[in-house]
Amino acid sequence: MIQCNVCDAQRPPAMKRLFLMLNAFAGATALTVAFANAEVATLNWQDLLPDARVKSPENADVPAWERVRVDLDKKDIRIPGFIVPVEYDDQQVVTRFLLVPYFGACIHEPPPAPNQTIYAEFEAGYKLESLWSPVWIEGKIHTSRVEEDLATAAYTLSASKIEPY
Image (cartoon, rainbow, N blue to C red; front, side, top):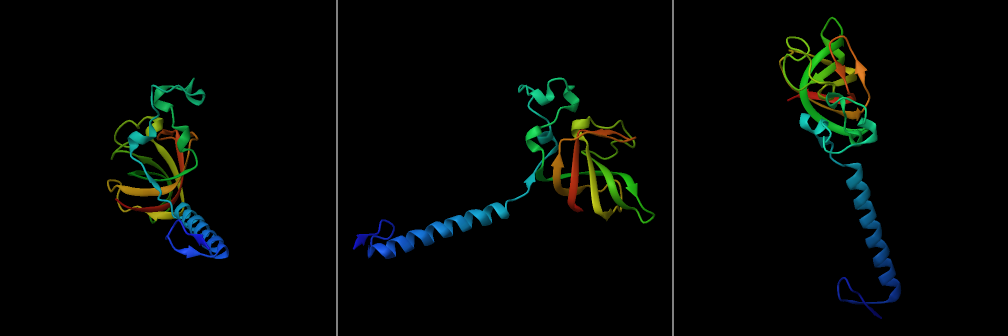
């Protein structure tokens, strides 16, 4: 008989091995489920700005207003903002747009800096009721530059979900 360190019971060696294997399996399963159900990172617009004190080779020759956080590349995120349509149909269903941090950006005011502008595509389309209504956008962000007539974006987003803020 072997003393079990977990429950202080006396167990035969085969039972202890089985108990340890089941425990290891349960732990591995819990880790897998935790990673599979990992929360989408909720960002604010400040989070898109790289730390100015940190010099990285990717941003070495890039003006400060265009520098990006390369560690965000290909991450699943959620961020609030305002939609500036780039492509839409007659029913105002938007499929390509710029996401900006404040109302009126790109339309009534000069556009925000490229690292404060996200070019997004939402294949399913989003019925835009009004330009002044903020939304939450979820999807995979990329650190790639897109130039549109209205503004230049230093980030792109493959949107998977859009909902009112």
